[in-house]
Length: 238
Ligand code: ADP
Ligand code: MG
Image 1: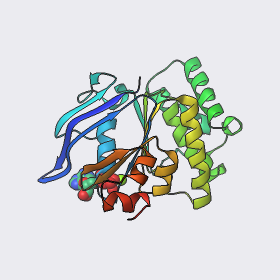
Image 2 (image 1 turned 90 degrees about the horizontal axis):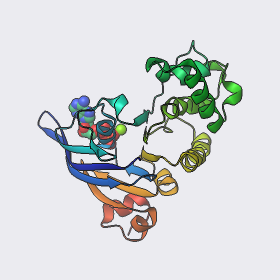
Image 3 (image 1 turned 90 degrees about the vertical axis):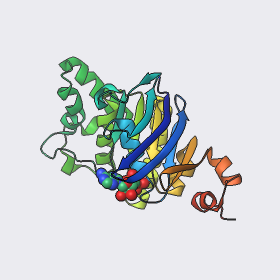
């Protein structure tokens, strides 16, 4: 579970085709990083996978099922955003539990899922606190907790660390890798930060102007970039 396929996916806003026909295969358990300059279509692609943006054409297939017309919450995906709005008046527990309350899960199930997520994220001792009482890193972990409790097949992260300072970013990078190792889910992670891409990815997808320029492991892209653009992005300019 957690297999994902893009087949001829495109997206236009009016006359502008911001995603050109795109094919991509993602295997279960991969940590895929989408990199590319601002405006190249990273968020649009991720939002289409999440079901937050309609495709103009093509198919998105998750675990063998075409999900083009499947609602976001039914797709087995959960997204973590760059700006994570926590509810200030709710405790950490209630913030993490929120999507499960909306889904009307039984109270016992909510309790056990939240506690499991909190253990993974080392938030066990913060469940009664309010967001204002937490550090920036802890707040970001609460936002990730809200995705974990939904137990998705695929996690989608849109530049989740870009609002954090450098030290915290490094710490969270390690934590997200640990999370990936312990959950084993497929993760798709958007960033414009080359270091994040190189250190976290099992597979990097380099995007440029709405199309995929190259796909490969960090080492493949580093040693055999197809052109100067990729080389410049991956940090081995020729
Ligand atoms: P990235 O996340 O890589 O910075 P985006 O996916 O946000 O890029 O945007 C890709 C392109 O699509 C940009 O040119 C952007 O202006 C355009 N775009 C994104 N969303 C919309 C929208 N809702 N309406 C019109 N144009 C959009
Ligand atoms: Mg973006």
